[in-house]
Length: 151
Image (cartoon, rainbow, N blue to C red; front, side, top):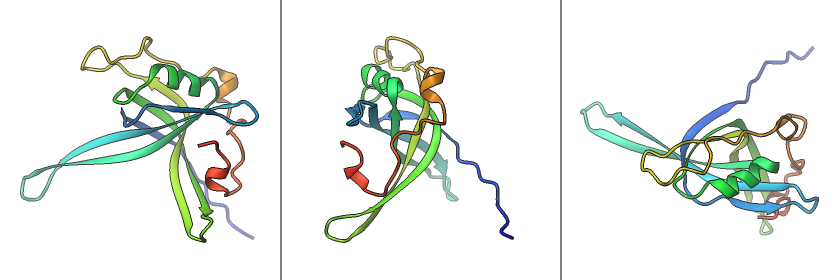
């Protein structure tokens, strides 16, 4: 008998967009937006020196939420993303194995910028219940990499 270990896949990220959201549509007409999010962390070394590190994550969002992100967010916009991690792997035409880890957003919260003038027109744009249902994760991943998504 195989013992099943419980698992939990949930991320909450807050940072600034590294590029404008890139909005595309699947052949079936479903909206898909991708953008980069940078999260900064400062820490002190054993010698007392302050160091900064940045973590970059690709965010993927679907449906009406994707369209709202493309409309209201831009490079530098602050955002809070809730979702799950998704790993994709594929083989390139020349035989190299590639993989990527991205966050698939269930919810994107638009945050106000402390720099003024950079905030989107409205505070938040969470998905409607029908668009954020876990039963609609987007197209199935068949390991085809970029061939699957029109990016």
